[in-house]
Each structure stands twice: as C-alpha cells, then as structure tokens.
Length: 281
Image (cartoon, rainbow, N blue to C red; front, side, top):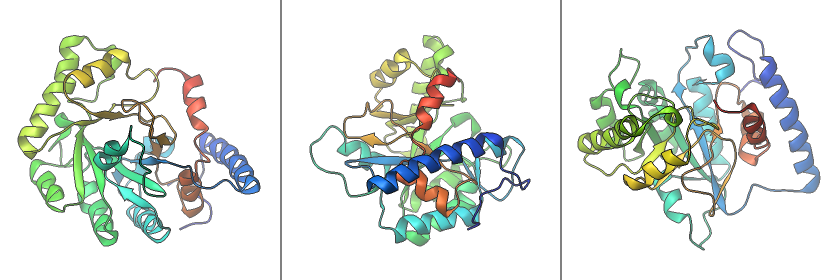
C-alpha cells in the first residue's frame, strides 16, 4: 500500500486532508492513553464499488476501492485477528449479555455493483471472510454495471455472501409518503425474498446520514419485518446501540494501511459529530 493516500488524480482533496489531520490527533491521544480497540460490540465497514475505475464524484464521495487495496484490507483483517461476522450474526448478538468475539467487524457493500462479484468475492474467498451486500432492487441487471440475478445466485452459492435490502430505487426515505415507503421497503423485501428463497430482514438506508431517514421510516421497517437497519453515520456499535440506527465506517481508495488501521481503531469516529452539524443529507 502507498504510504500516503492520494486520489486517482494524484491529489488529496481538502476535505480528506482535514479528516486525516483530525484523525491523526485522535490517534495520538489513543496512543498516549493506551486505549485499545473499542470493547463489546462491532464495527461495520461500508464499501461500494470494488474497481480500479473512478469517476470524478468518487474522489471526495469515496465510493470506490481499488481491487488491490481491497485485497490488502481483507488480508489486514485476517492477519491482525479481526473477527469478521456476517451482519446477521452481529445483530443476533445485540441486546444480549454475552460478549461478542474480540475485534468484531462486519463487511458491507451497498448498491450491488457487479464488481463486488468480479473483484470483491475472490479476495473474500482467499481469506474466508463473510460480507453482506445491500441491493437496490431497481439497479439489478442495469447496464452491466450492477449485479444481475445470476450473479447474485453465484454470490449466494459462495457461502460467504448474504443480502439485505437497500430499497427499491434509492430515494431519500424521509421525504416519502406511506405508499412510496411501502414500495421502497416492503416491495423490495418481497422481491428479494422471492428470488433468493431466503428471509431478508436487514436494511441499509439510501444515503444513510442524518435526515435521510426518520422515526416514521424506522417504525415502518419494524412493522414490515426487518430486524435492523444500517446508516452511514460514523461510529462503533455496542450491544445497546439502536438496531435501526446501526453505524458504519466508510472505507475507500483513501484507506491505505495506516488510515485503515485508524478507521478500525475508532480514530475517525469523531466524524459523526461533523455529519450531525452538516445537517440533513
């Protein structure tokens, strides 16, 4: 991995320079205090596309992880003794009194890009790591960029990949009325369950930060049979975290070995406060 992360254009955007500087301060405090990996709970890593191809929006949005870097990150998890759980396994342990395995992590991928199969699965298979892909149903088979149903069957057959819903069409749920919410949450669930022949009871909010969902959305999810929902709000999940507001740590091209270790240790969790101050997105 490179010593310094850079964008595909060779420059680190100002937003990420700021994030790196602040996280460096937190890493320094952690080092001086001797604080270790957060305790009884799990960290959900949030990926999107696993590809060497970038679009301009990917640079700041951090939507893409090069396949070689993804491979290195998976090796890092394996070699450093992280306990990689499926999202379902992690949710099953929440609300109980038993301790989760040490250094528990979940790997999630949003939207359902075809490169999750082509570039992501081989790395997961090499290290025997589980992952959950949150599928946007209307994207399935679209334009060759996204997984089709045969791809999804192949992923399911690997024994490492499980699936959740990422809605029907990736709209901001807090803006929708009841009829549209039913389509996004219930119809997507039923289609996935029918095609996968398996229960789909985990959800990932489109966009996922503050203001993209609300209490009405959460109640709707509960009423139609979901057990938990993942946000894109930064942070670590304890056994007592609201299962419909589970936090995730965004991972991308930016996260070389140094930054990836800092993400896992919680040095970027402060960004949740920045997301809150930035307001609804």
